[in-house]
Amino acid sequence: MRLLSLLAFFLVTQLAAQQAPYDVFPPAEPPYYRVRYEASTRPGELVYPVNYTVWIPPGVGQVRGVIVHQHGCGEGSCKSGLTGAFDLHWQALAKKHDCALLAPSYEQPDKAECQMWCDPRNGSSSAFQKCLADLGAQSGHPELSNVPWALWGHSGGGHWAGGMALLHPERVAAAWLRSGVPLLTENPQRATIKTHTVSAAALGVPLMCNPGTKEGVTVKEGRFAGVWPSNEAFFKEVRSRGGLIGVAVDPLTAHECGNQRYMAIAWLDACLGARLPGKSGDPLKPMPTEGAWLAELLGSEAVPAAKFSGDSKLAVWLPNEQVAKKWMQYVKDTAVVDATPPPAPRNLRIESNVLTWEAEADLESGTAQFLIERDGEVVGAVPENAKNPFGRPLFQGLQYSDTPVQPLARMTFTDAKAVPGKKHRYRVIQVNTAGLKSE
Image (tube, rainbow, N blue to C red; front, side):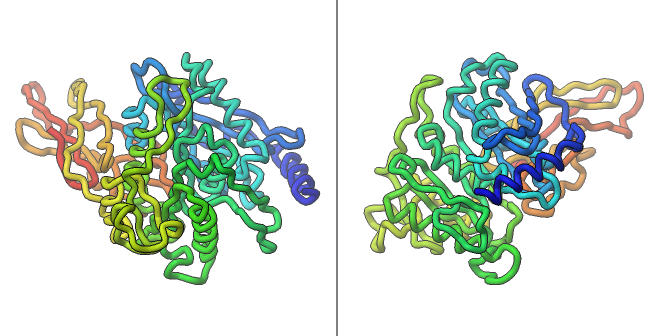
């Protein structure tokens, strides 16, 4: 504790000269809202400045929950949090359940101590809850401060999301932990990391550990080799006590997020559908367990719980058959199947030769690109060549911590070859990452 106090004091003095804003911000105009808090010098409060950006589904009456997309440690990952609330794919999940989508961006300097924010007890839990009240007032949705949370976190963000689930089990509908988990037993090599305890209430929160296979499963050396041992220890402690926890090893990656969103969003969709109350502000429903499927740890086949022949208290827990089938595909090659086309774009507008439109992403597979038709012939695509160094190509691109790249992609196309003075008929078609086209 003495070490952490001295470290916190040093960080606060170093941050005093840091200028706001932290990076280039996408504009936060309705339905987006943003608050920023300066670093605190008070003991137990957050020693870094932080921004919170929230997206509220247009037209929603009362918000039923908050989906939090939490970045990882390091200056680059922190900056990537600036675009998390603008992700069309995550917005599709939020809209389905009348939830807000919130993305923090902690202003952690390069090589500074991540534990000062990714451990919720170091001020980030209270700052997060304060932001919900402030953003609720700003957006006209005061219920934000009382509704449940669905948490997704990468690396240090996984540590934070898991820690929040253990500290506030009555508020957390589910938590997806990508490459990071809370520490339950002391580690002499990581003396600055404080341990957590698992309460009986926390055992009822659905949790999913999601390490990359190159983080200690198949690759035993290197910077991230310790991720799997930590995940395994966390899983076994929670599951041995009957906790609703699973493991989904990404078979293609190390610490980068890869294609995990296609599994994470499906899993969170199932958990939110089962647990969110019908009325905003009511308590979470208990997670149903009668339809659960189980699988061997590090296995690839799941079966209904009643047919599982191994030790159920060491088995991967999956909420239902639909999720289990997606999980079996994900742990094999991440190619989660999608047989339904994406929503059609809407509100196409044309001014001179410039087209603009709106669209919602495919809940299962997100948006890869838009095809532009003129007079029945495809004349362009946006983007022309969708790219993503970490997984399936996406319209918005993808950063290391699973957030859109800046500048944010826009739904616009200039038809440079349109014939001046001639009337043309245009159509815009959405293509999801499974290659399926909209109407």
